[in-house]
Amino acid sequence: MQEKLSIDTEENNFDKLYNLFIEILMKIGHIPSFSAGIIKDDTLIWSKAYGYYDLENQKQATTDTLYIQASVSKTVTATALMQQYELGKFNLSDDIVLLPLIPPQFEAIGYILPFCLIAT
Image 1 (tube, rainbow, N blue to C red):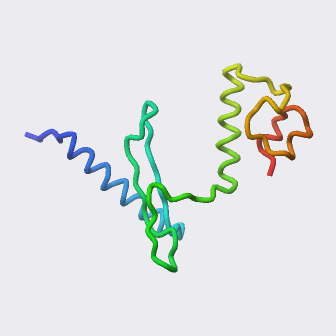
Image 2 (image 1 turned 180 degrees about the vertical axis):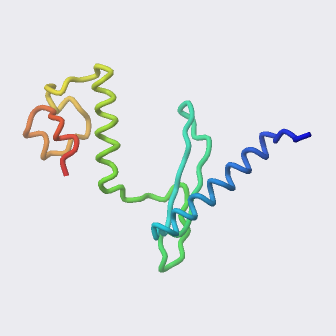
């Protein structure tokens, strides 16, 4: 008869498989460090850091390590804004100054256009 895994064992198996997955991706992609977290119901339920954020000085990444997000943040921001648009929080013709943290180069436009959300 097969024995059921306890919650602790299931979590350990998840952690081991996830760690292996991340380590393989880091090697394939030549990624020196990586930090991740899982949020459920507005609560951080898991976080971990991998590798070195400073290879030369062998400084290990932590869950508090800050990373440059570069172009990835455009996709995340555009998706978040369009989700808010779908909820009726604003219209694409609204005055852009109503939105917090709009870069100065877009303030001159005066309103939101879809291309602004994906501009490079």
